[in-house]
Length: 454
Image 1 (cartoon, rainbow, N blue to C red):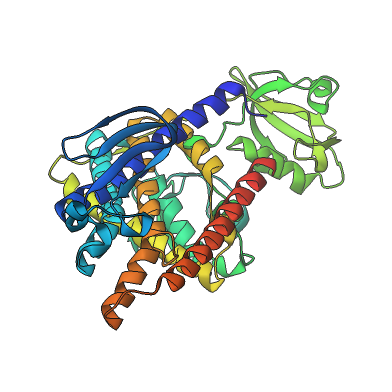
Image 2: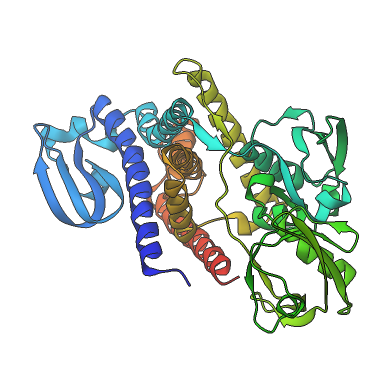
């Protein structure tokens, strides 16, 4: 179970993330509305009861509210009440349709601007990462004969410079469900091409499950096969293993990383047969004969184990993605375009039924990712903010009544037919939009809860 401090930290970073991004989104509406001569009645940071407010010279009330999860802009609107005659020229619905379109689209546009700025700052600061060096392999990676120490050079011809690039490229290739060639440089310097057969993946897996099935772990994050704990009464204790022993091999299978140990036990002792372990202790190499015991693991599955725990070490980043202030400008635009196209493609695949709806995340996941990225440093947090800002902008452009995209659809229809939609049609659309939005939020919460309990 998470500690209270972890929960508080996640909640804080979620408030920072959503408060910052939604407020910037609403600021886009505010700026363009003022530029079009529309009176802004209120600009609120947060929702609910006012904690602080003051009126500007233009008559706008600026407010900080009690619930710090976003904000809103309230414009002078004849649909919400009578408008004084001397203010009719500043009323929203009386403006030309192109101005209303500009005001609506300004929110998502400011999310795009924020994302480009965040990625630019991330590149100037320098985002630490792992080199695309392969550690433990399993699943499809093992079938493709990838091995520890391989450095991934490209996927399907696309160059790979760090593990983030690799993860995104793997997710795209897995979603396509087609064989993908990986060009790797092996430890001896030979360059070879290995094929990952993504067509073997089951349908409707979320991205996390897909990456688990692929079976690739960064070498820097793969735990070394060093014994940290010895279980009392276990096979290792009975054989004489000690903390600090480094496992070199089990039977004829070499051991490079901690996960290799469980794989070797599963392969060589499926029914509890005895095993021979070679370990390094100080400057000596020792051999031990062990009899694995049936064990119930933390995830509740049963299997054979030898009663040892890993010596946990912190993984160290070994590369940095950095650009100069000028070079970072086109790189930030390229990063924005790449992630935008990925997001739109994923949405299209989910609508078509080709991608799992489990990919939709809600506020719980956002809180967790916000806290984790903040812990990883300012560059990673900026990267996270850029991704969420893009997602917020794209989601708001969906043609769902109540969202910006729904209002945009109304105004495009008005352009075509030459007159606004009837109030009855717009009211029906609002109810439909609220229903769709509630269903989407319910699905996001459901997915978040499933991730927590699984």
